[in-house]
Image: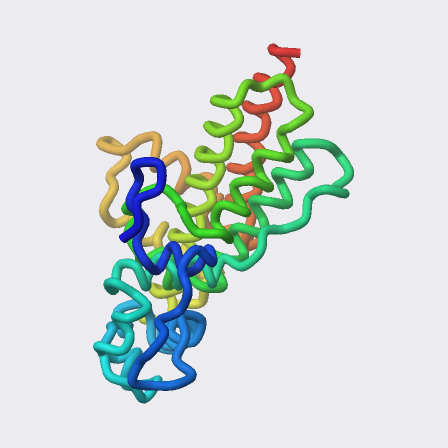
Length: 249
């Protein structure tokens, strides 16, 4: 661990930022932090995050488990680095027409795509603030899109935390529904209608009048576009941010 301005950084975090050189010697020439992360991500993509362990990664790479610990201090560190690798570089919003709202819209859609494409990362608990290059790059890009607004720095950060939380919840819900439909053999388009039939049996109009009004309206039987709810939620969040921007202008 290295202490920088009073903060101790894990060795793997230092390495991914280029603050620490690779081990000078080791049992397996050619082993690198990048290779370890890539091997771990490959396991997660193929089998889910539950299949990832230091031992499994070592076996797949043909090295001893102890060899990995020369680069990564723990599995938790490895999970952080895997997530950063999966995020990749943030979208370029510099030339995005339409101002901050268009920029944040594109940012949220890009984040949703990444998290749905690599849904294993959603199963990793959030245990702290981001400290890795790509994740901080995403935060920087989102904050920069608000640069021409009258929002203060606290408000800008709050906007980004709110939007990233919304996107993560939507991506997690999509992943959960996808898992359910695969497990039950239910078509994704039919899931809401099937749920409505279950509710009709369980939720009496006397006890759940508001819910029954929704069921009776037939809204759950419609075959909406897959991203309808994401679009609705995102637009409402952006409406609120726009109202704040106008109040401060």
